[in-house]
Figure: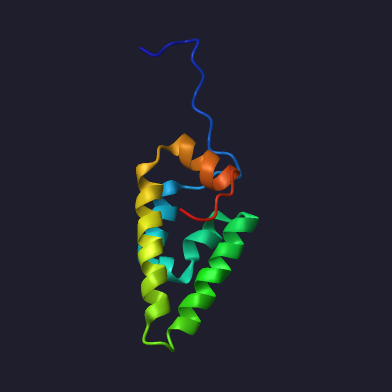
Length: 100
């Protein structure tokens, strides 16, 4: 039997983002900065543009740019997935932390 005084959990707010989605985007498409665009803050979008440009320009230089951005994105994806939900929301969504 449930507690009659407990309230049901609130649905995520309009500005909340799913850490699993962000982590998987970082791991699989992170070299393009897609996870940064998903998180959507001003600093995040700037970081996404930087990652995208480095990947596109670095493709001409023996794929060094996408490789480096892929390593950074892989690390970011793992960090996203290992944080708890509240810490992820406060750091990367509300706090708009752009890098690692």
